[in-house]
Image (cartoon, rainbow, N blue to C red; front, side, top):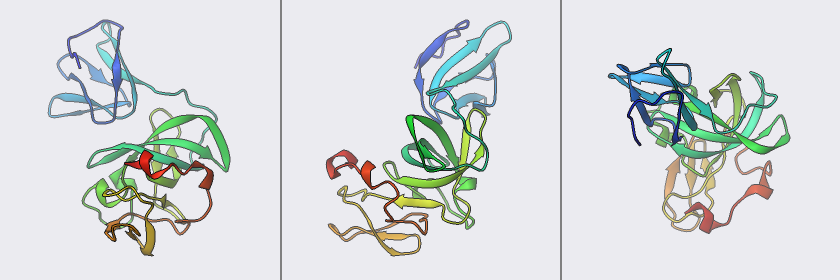
Length: 203
């Protein structure tokens, strides 16, 4: 990514955790954060800069629709790092969304118990049941609450759909590995059966 200063310009698409500028050039808004003098994106979207005000922001991938704090949704993990995961929301309050809404899950909202990193919580391709805790851009979600957590998950080794072994522990019926997830009490229930991909799509 080219980090040279541009005035009121678009950059390429960025993901949560991508470096987009340095603090000497711009001040971040709520869609970004500063760490060790660098500015990183919190969300999926395009970077916009305002050279007159020396501000930088990330325009979300999809515009917000009717969404409010407390809404219960279903979505798929698209991308993750140690502290955050990017989730595309496909269902809100039992209704389908034609174009997914991008949201952020931070590790502090992943579990009531201590987890070292997001890889103990979920993996890309997993489906989550969550609660909206911030409806403004960037949208934030939480897995803390009754019935929230991973509801469908796939083996990181072979791509097979994982089976429930016990709370927060899943097992692959193909390669027999066990894997950690923060599971919902609805794990494996037919909430979104029609959205399950083939095994090839999860590899």
